[in-house]
Image (tube, rainbow, N blue to C red):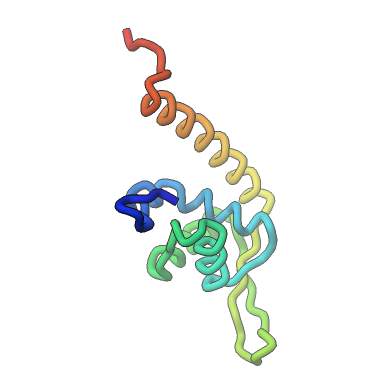
Length: 122
């Protein structure tokens, strides 16, 4: 995690917003999850660097459903409460591959500029 003055510093939220779809699809590629589970897993797997609010997550999930990248279904939890689970589709896996490739190029170019290893501009 980024440190500033000895305490953890969270990245600017705008850095997360461009990669949220990639992160959600990545989580779902490991298995079906319900919304709060995705929020918790993202936070835990990122060592509390990334946090998503429900108001951010659900519109993205609904958009992915409209694109047929994910489907949803209800399932009863052990507590008896019904939960809405999300499942990545084949189309969603293709989208995930595209997003990973985009991220690879993007992160390489940002790192090249930040570290000063980028080629000279014409």
